[in-house]
Length: 416
Ligand SMILES: [Zn+2]
Image (tube, rainbow, N blue to C red; front, side, top):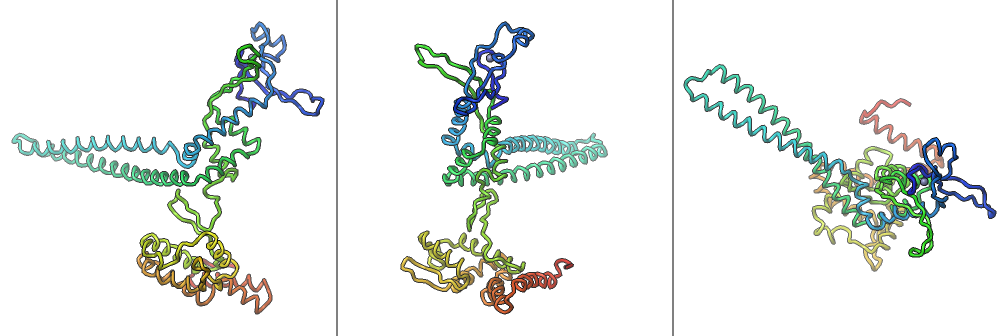
């Protein structure tokens, strides 16, 4: 720490100083109060009578104490720190502001409506100037329309923030239920390099660190360096570290299925590599229909679709699918009974047809049946290699498929 230390005895700045090399080869780093190490001339010029009495202090105990306390925040209040990481207090302030605006607009609108009623009452009076009344009614009408428009805009802006903050609730629930993630973030912070640590600590200090030295005394026993400080984790910096990949990020968890509570979506690792847009869309329609189906009929689906299996069997199935693709045999139960994965895919396809219809993606879903019968890209690629023995031919086949698709749908001009 360099610019954050203050002397507890004289209030002067405390700076690290590298002392001369010790006999054992180590270089002691010590904190020194500016007014303890200064020259007599400077001392006199500053109007000080004598040097500061703060002794030189080893940097290590001070630094480890601040770091330990910082990490303690992660141990004892991790959810608070992490929730702040994923949402912003600013949003709540903005919501309060919008609510106030809505209240004010509603009051004004009521006032204008009352004025309108009063203007109509004037119609009944005999000595009313009708022309003037009409003008006033028109102005009143304009004002009401403007207010209603503003009110509408403000309300929809408010609603948008409400849905965002509900999303944030999901995130904090997610964090509460994912203690592993908390531990991982803590570990990542702990393992930050020295420079990042320093940055994090210095920017998390609410004020300067007051350094002092407690002399030996009869009550407290042997003395030593002391320091006082207050910490408030610098969330923005942690966020930056996340973006830089130094700290575990929700985005960076690589799994086959990855919940994105911040978007309310479930991300699915790409299956095979689809060279054509049509196939990519078919896979997307398949995933979407399956998830929607499970959402709607989760109870009925049990037994109809796949049964949840112990993790080790799921892992075996995953391994089989990776190794054998569409020719894999899928283990269906604990006794090891298995069925071709093609049949399973067909079952799922048939079960989700209605849901796909409701989602308006049946046409896209039909692409799956085509992939099942004609084979996915990896099979086509193997066939081309089998026939030609040339990787170049494989690549140009893949490129050709996309190219002809683009030409067929006239998506973009292909210039090669
Ligand atoms: Zn001092």
